[in-house]
Figure 1 (cartoon, each protein chain N blue to C red):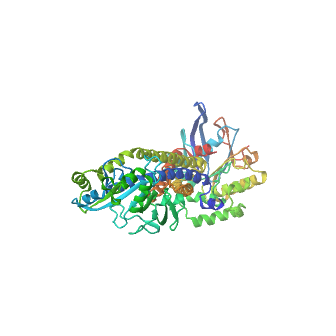
Figure 2: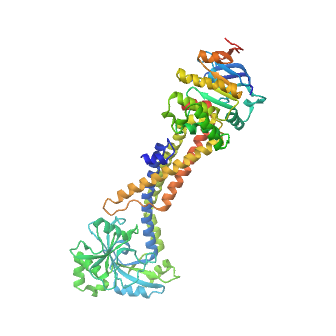
Amino acid sequence: MVEVRRLLPRGYLFTVLGIAVGVAGLVALGAMAERITRFIDGGDRFVRGQISVAGEGMGMGTGFTAGGLLRAARIEQIARVPGVAAVQGQVMLPLNPTTSQFLTLTQELILGLDPAVRMSNREFRELPVREGRALRAGDRGVVVVGADFAASRRLRAGGALDLATGRTFQVVGVLDKTLTAPDRFAIVPLDDARDLWLRRDPLLVQVFTGSVGGLGRGDLNTGAAVAWADGVDPDALARRIQAEVPGLNVTIPGELSRLLRQSTAFFTALLFGIGVLGLVIGGLSLANTVTAAVFERIRDFGIKRALGATDGQLLREILGEALGVSISGGLLGVGLALAVGTLVDARGDGQQLFLFSPRLLGFALTFSVVLGGLAATYATLRIVRLSPAEAIRRGA
Amino acid sequence: MVVRARGLSKTFRGPDGRPVPVLHGVDVDVKAGEFVAVAGPSGCGKSTLLNLLGLLEPLDAGEIWLDDVCVSRLPRRAQCGVRGRSIGYVFQSFLLIAGLTALQNVLLAARYVGRPRPSALAEAQILMQRLGVAHRADHYPAQLSGGEQQRVAYCRAVLNAPPVVLADEPTGNLDEGHAAVILTELRALCRERGTSVILVTHRADAAASADRALRLREGRLESQGGEGHS
């Protein structure tokens, strides 16, 4: 505290602390809004990066491959549609089927992929691996987990994971944080995912072992991601697939993006509310603190006027001090918010609540300096209207 | 510098909004190098008169001249220059800035008149040495005694060698010893520099030591005093 006092203009310690509290509130609320925005934007990028296809009907698939079983023959038909560059069959299952599935924003998922087939999503060509490695062709019994998934279970590469089915997988990689859905994924080889699906769905086992309709293992797909060739309009291609391949649920990327935006409209409104709240709380706190600090020194300004200070000299002097105090308070507030956010995010359940983006921190600092300057200017203009004697009397 | 005031009037608003007249058409003449005391009972308008003469308070009526310039009619910015260069103030409650050291408080007088810092610093150190507060240069006002604070305030008032010094009860919060130091310095200012000093005081000895004593009663000038005033 003694060191902090030495760095600040004398008499301004509590002003700086007051500003810091306001800025910390603004930054913390903003960081939560940034976090949600990144999540929604990530989902939007994902749906715009691929054409998601599932079989007709309900099925037990989840997430973006929700729909009926997508048989191998259908996948081959899709691949032959002009404009299609690649089709990646997938199995996507809820990690815990008893969890309410409508809460898809935080749902943990098992994603089965064939590592031999290139990722079909243009926005996520490959998922960044923080530790260990990605899945390789020929892998079995291994899993790559998302950052939040790993954090909530304290998983590291080389560890073991029971995917709630009594079957243990070796963790070979942990993904870097994406701040969107893959953070909560457990990615396994496609054949392993098919096994997990069969283990947890007795009806499917009966159908499968009875060879009803000639089902084979290759038919066990909850969906597929379709990539388009360069220059192809994805929405038009999705409609072409729908028209040319019967028995499919095809999502139109543009429409899905709009739907996602509509379904997250509540969150958008919430973010707007949080942003406005942060600005009002932080702004009022900051402006009030700076204005009060200037008015508190009204006697000093009266003395300076008596010593010959002009309005301009006083204004420059006060603005200079307000700038120093606002920057100090802003930096301290950002530091405070970072410390609190880091502590909260380290609580161990893997959920990251705050995202302190550079744009947020830059905005908070600029906001505090500009508002601090405006508040100081307002207070100074009020003070210079007074005669020196009146200012000294009021400050006595 | 000759100080001439004609018909100075001032009315304040009371808490209930009613006008409270404080000065009624007061005329004052002070010659260059003259030491004039302003005496009178509490509430008679002594401090208000000093504030008006020092351009610290706007006039309701009247004029104030310094030599041949009507300073009360000058624009706001020019009045700031007059306050900084031509008038020095010593107040009863010292009015030092708490966040500045003794030396910084003294140098404040030079800041707003554009004096080069080196010459102001050298002069401030000499003044503080003379007043016996040089060893307290780095202390803040709260770390100084009342006598020391008033001596620092005096150094600030005379740093720019103003031709007029206005002192409002400068010894009111001081013991005899410190009061004598301040009065001696004010007297020396008139004698050595030809400064016009106007001193508001309740102290009979202070008024007696002045060249002349103006007596105010209920906002009117009762007596202009004179050589060998009583």
